[in-house]
Image 1 (cartoon, rainbow, N blue to C red):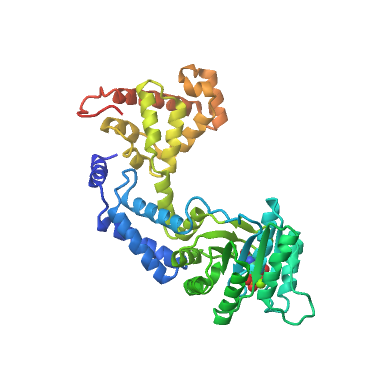
Image 2 (cartoon, rainbow, N blue to C red):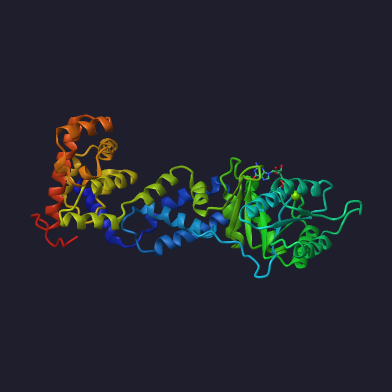
Length: 442
Ligand code: GDP
Ligand code: MG
């Protein structure tokens, strides 16, 4: 590792803040990724402005380079907006039944979701009931009955032959039935239309008033793209919802609708629908969606590097062990793996706390591509051998070479390198290395 690079890293760390120039290149990249992910333009603008401000005001995380750091901020922000790292639990009613109402455009996947939710709740020992408050389309009730059968739960619907029923009355009536039959969860399926329309909004709002739901889930097709904002806003203002469910995520979408909805309405995404079968359903993971949205160009690679960046705490622990002569091949393996995950081995070495020029010179002899083989060798060792390399005699070395698919020479080299490195690092950790003024204990 060249001194110049070390110096550059030092400078960067000394800065304490990212500069606009540091930030702008990465932000441009992020902007492009978001647009390609189908996030609506106004949402992209807001989001990027916010990220830029935060990047310029946050203290620099010394373990990351500027681009990685901006990406890390973007990732954190995406996760936060999409619902945070802890997925929100369903707001169960204090007095059962818990009422969940589904709203959204026609074809969004509400009826299918009703079946999925029902099955999911049954799996959690609940006793759900479905309510057919979509009386718009002739076969809507039949469709709900079919998914109800598949999920093994009863479906409440208007008596047939009564002509077109009143969905508000059906919904209200269903509450009484649910209490009578002791269902602890009621899922109300409602009608949608092809586009946002006022009569539809009013009907949904009336049903909502009639059943006083604990949760209103806005169901949205993830392929909706740029229309996500207008649709989400219309339902948010017209009916109000407590969470969103993203459907058809099995299709080849970048999932930008998730961000558009969450950012526009401030409501978290609760679940994801990933296929037509009732089991194709999962709790929504904001972190996975953040990766999906950013899985464009090189952005994800940047994130991976950022996340894999050297864990300072572990490095310190290793350094402390070293100081006590306890640095083992296990620690060495752990560091190798971290470094390899972090991508550029030699560059990352520069980020190790307290690393000296001399130490780096020794490490420069290291061929990065050999890291995989080194890992294999150490993994073929017994715990004892890893803790006490002294015991590695000829037959043990031969066994390890066989087990790791390497040669005895390679095993010998590793042991030698480890020996040199731990000696050198021990000296360094004791602060006895010449030419290291001001180097405190690690
Ligand atoms: P609704 O009008 O909102 O009730 O929507 P439906 O539940 O009737 O779903 C409309 C269509 O989308 C149906 O053909 C479903 O099988 C299909 N669908 C629903 N959810 C998903 C999903 O997550 N993935 C896929 N591929 N298809 C889905
Ligand atoms: Mg339906």
